[in-house]
Length: 563
Image 1 (tube, rainbow, N blue to C red):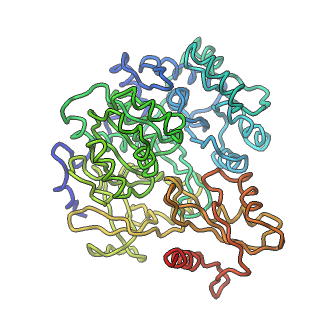
Image 2: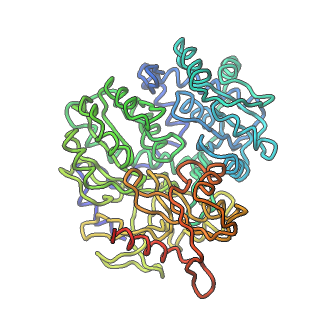
Image 3: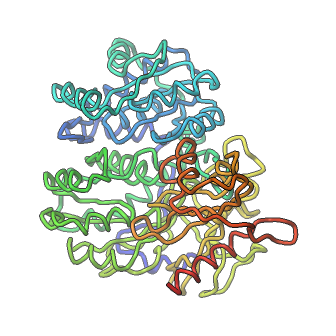
């Protein structure tokens, strides 16, 4: 397969990256710890830690985990928002020879239990705000070792005040009981007295289990090897080099990390990318607090800004956004969901920086394509394949379709996962015989190699950049005793692009929409909870009795169009 799109590459971007440059993320980390020792690795709530501190703290937590007797490759769950302990814990687990299982801190007990059991996690590093969720499922998991952090752990004297506000004023820490758990500070103190044994970790060892619905509603772990992660970091660095070199030259490179670090986009494009280039991550704990977010932005000159469309849009509509100094902004990348042209145009006008768009999935570590950083305006495409990557648009029979014809986007490269954790059948469904990963998204490739997404093959709903799978929502709603059957679809929403809508056939005639929503809140993360509920006497079905979500979507779109 010829990579004809290479002729569109910006000057200085190589056709391929050296996948053997690092044997593992551990080697990449340790090189940066030495090279950039005095630079700031991360900033959170005005407190910074240097690469030297990240080195020493991650070695301490890693040594403590090793002292618990965990075997090489053991899964360590990390359930934290964007606080300084998060990158410390990730680096610690990897350097100790373990596999990181990133966990959404907002998970309900049901969701957490599934992920811990499916991954076989034996240890967890968790913020106290979410410890009550763990308590509810702990006896039914394999977790044996628990490290509990507080919001203020690494904030110095300010941390005492922060913990008081979080616990006593905002009451954000529900009561919990986790016998045998150790505090983050105590684990760090104990580990600093120990020696971190350097494990024999190579390219084919598992670095992350990144959970995703994949092509079905069953949450599965994308098995990302060290070589997958190293490859995507090097691909992103190579792709952004033209922007990094654009005058004025700035060091260290400051990246806004408002996306949650448990999400693959932030993990790679913010944290790991910054480590490779000796940059600084500006960790935003609560990006939904737009005024507070802008207040943080005004304290710095930022150089890289990965985010989702809804976040860019929210910032642009706040009156204080114009007070932020974007004179050194080199690159802004939209991912996780479609970037809207109106938002991109407003972003360019406000910041002077073209909003690029990237495309990828948890299964691809995540980046497959990105628009070149040297474009003068928003392209409306997902760009070109990054170095060492192939994109093929194929029909249902696996044949490549002509330019301009819609087909399934398939990707191949060193960043593509090894498979779904302990699910060979699911892996076989998404891999072609010639090694391409079937994304489930429908796209069109243009003659110059740029690709446009035209639709989703899956019924997946995108809420503010997060995947919501109808099967999961339906399973929860259908478990309500007053529900006969239901169907979930995505409907347009001005704030989150899409919102979840459920159609319900009642068993209990007194069942109301608020009853459904309240019930869903006990079982689902907030972004998965239905925003709209419509009751019907029956749902459209195929000849074999399958509920036709497609018809419900079409009916809803027609109704919206006639309003």
